Length: 93
Image 1 (cartoon, rainbow, N blue to C red):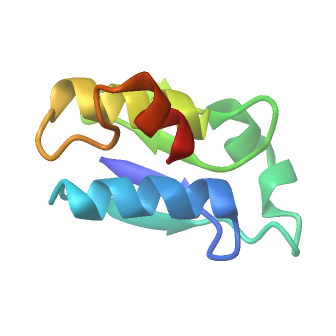
Image 2: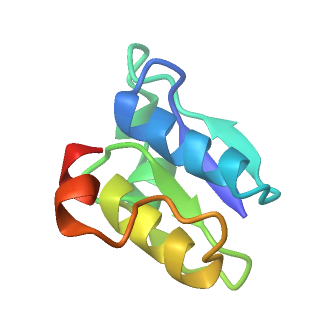
């Protein structure tokens, strides 16, 4: 997997935490938001809204929203779980 990420992005940070917690292998591709790299045509092809993170799966599928990425990771790699089953406990996290 490839994670397009910016080191100061909180949304990218939460995906990096989940990937590392689950022990998944991935390559980080830095996107310098301050320098405007998200506006490059090549990056816009990955994510038309030009945000980070973007997780590119091994089959080429691109996921672009951090919460959707976290949900995907929890479904394909259920252990350890990112959120408890109890809805109140999950909401508090």
